[in-house]
Image 1 (tube, one colour):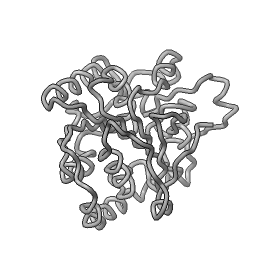
Image 2: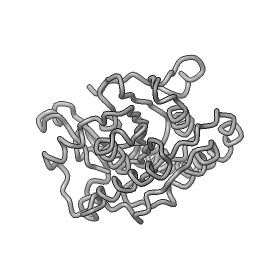
Image 3: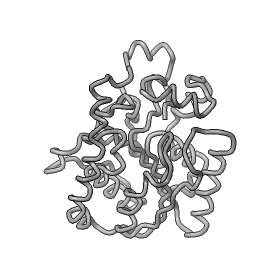
Length: 265
């Protein structure tokens, strides 16, 4: 989760990006309420347009496994998509062979369905999604990340020590930072929250570009994958015609729930 990529180490202090404070950490306790809100909102969510049945590969966050992404995958299955869990047990970071297996799985899913695969990653899982898209741009339809730190201060999270402990990797490796910061060459959406208690929200903001966008929602980090507002945004992005991808429209009634267009500065 805490792998992230600033342009220069000196910019980290200038930007003043720090890990979320204790108050935001406490707000992570609202995750069960987000699950309850998802259940309550399901009749509304079921009215969203059906998808086109294309395959989706979902990556869990740091220290999490496929059961944590089940609500998201179950919702998307109900919209007509073919979802796939990452099937590598608990996510303890990019240990030897992990990313290679992610790439091979995405390639296999593409070959199985004969269609490009959408990649969704929650927190650290979003790093995998982005890297797989870079390795397999022709087999990837789009990338959607949820609270993923891919830029900014690599220690601007409240999980970087845990990451170092379980992964065996140290944060801040210049080569890793440079690689992670590169944008995927496919439509890429970052869904983030300013009230994220684990990852500083500025570390989840894409640079502006024709294939990159940011969608701000009101959600916790732990509950983002089952927050009904975040699920709405995910479904909206997946339902697009890949030949005519466009940035998320936050006008009208949506402006009460979403913000877009923020730059990484």
